[in-house]
Length: 330
Image (cartoon, rainbow, N blue to C red; front, side, top):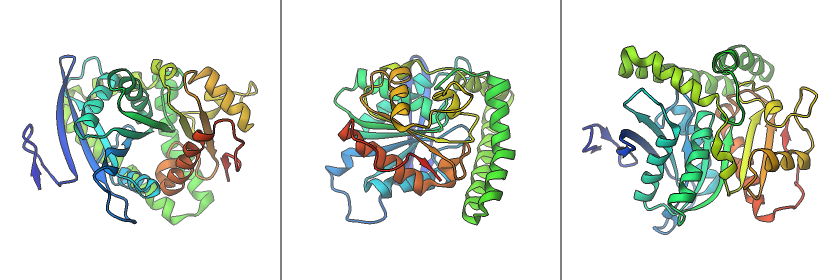
């Protein structure tokens, strides 16, 4: 076990916490590292490359749910993965941009020079900011691509009437309906674990924030409900993974077909995303999952999500080539 000099907290050799001063605010960066479970030990040179996983709201780098997702990416990519969670002590003017700035500093301190970013829900919005910051402040760090899993911040929505309401409905009714259709005990177990992880982290945050928790929560919700201005500045390839029935990050609002649905055609989908969401990116693709296709699809199907998203990202080296298979999973 190692002890953090800033906080006195104990961590394993593959986890820790750093604190950074960003624009007069202290931002804590908690991290956990995952090694691929198969293959040879990574060389020193190989350790300059990493998958960076940013959890969604109410989950942290230490949640079992994020462990499964991070390990799946480490195994599929045969490289190390870091799950990273951020938190600032102050409640006023909550800023994902400052949090992303702190992550960028952590990445450089770790000696990482090449990353693939994976952002889930709120983590997707944070990842978009991180991409812009790395491009502008740390151009020597190569970004192989961004993988956005049910990312928020892709369009404006009402903080309460849309985002909060749909999140609750997704966590309850829609997820229950999809699990009942699947009759998949493994998925049920993962959903139960995710719900337990989220509840535990909410209670822990209430304990830390005390009476200021409602203000902190409202600030986070407002941030997640706004369109991320840094999307237009992303210059790397982008892969989006969406649940077909997800209303928190809704496919028919990201790529609308004009008939209250989403664009089904693979080529038209990519063209719309490149022209309207990520105009500076050379390659943007979206896969829409039908099986367990709620806002939690990446947590209930981590292995499949990691395999599919990394495969699509690998195709970005062949821009313009036709897809080998449909991007809407059954």
